[in-house]
Amino acid sequence: MNLLDSWLDKLEIENSSRHDNRSSMEYRLNLWLNKILDHPTINKIVCITSGGTIVPLETNMVRYIDNFSTGLRGALSAEYFLRSNYAVLYFHRKGSLLPFLHRLTNQQQNYHREEEKEQQQQKCTKEYLFTLDFETIEDYLVGLRWIAKQLEAIHLNRSSRQKQIHLSFYLSAAVSDYYLNREYRPEHKIQTKSMLSTIAKSSDDYLDKSLSTIEDLHLSLQPVPKVMKLLTTLWSPSSYVISFKLETDHRLLLVKAKQSLEMYNPNVIVANLLQTRSKEVWLVFKQNNTQDIIVEHINMENDTDEINKRQIISQEIESILIPRLIQLHEQTIDRTIIK
Figure 1 (tube, rainbow, N blue to C red):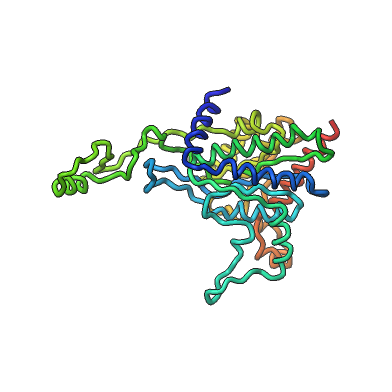
Figure 2 (cartoon, rainbow, N blue to C red):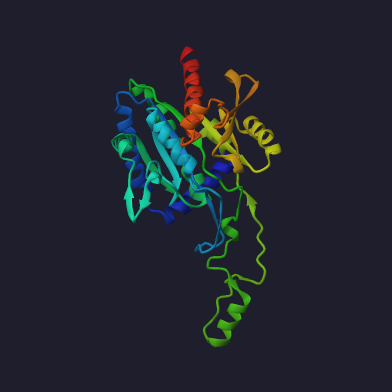
């Protein structure tokens, strides 16, 4: 076992002491997976990660560092995967946007659903969608590994069933790059020195010296270990992995996306800029498992046909992105079958 897996084992034990619902969660997931395995037409499962992770600054968390993400891309993408006959395991930030539910509108304090889509959405949501949530960066890392191993077990045990399940990961969550290790976090809320001095003068009670005090707050953060290489090579090597790269500087975007493709070995990287993420993305992948890197630009405004422009003005870029990713996934499946 490598050092990173050992560290995650420790985190998993600590998390289980705080969250005692793992056995219930595993039971529910297995029920859902068995339904998918017995389904006559579904043979693809995608795990979508969505929303941002938070970095607690205290053990009893009051303050934290958050990542920019509403979970909209993950929620929209889940809808298009569901409509394409994928079963979706939706691993999302607690409180972030959920598939279909985010489309509810508030008009005169009454919620209204898009009626023409309601039946279809309810049907595929009930049968094909399973949700799990995370909050902290530790929750996310431990949960991702657990999900990957649960899904990989289906692939390894498929000989007992007629149907082969094709797995994929769509890693659209905004994962923290830096965190504060638990051993460096104060147990209780960080207090200002002036506040503690006032408390000490007005009270004869013993003041716990373990309380953290600040005047200026200086943080020393550690880089979050990269786990994608473990996902692609160890936890779920049979899965088709789609990762994301977000930047604000266009000069760095494709350079870093190509570097990530080489270092971590996902099948596709979806590169996007913060400023234009809802209008354009770049797909970065290797052609037919060769060393030749392909870059495809998907842009909602590329079409010069004015009629088509009017037709897509209310669409999401995911309506183009997801079908293309599914096409790439199916090409990989076909090559595997031929072998």
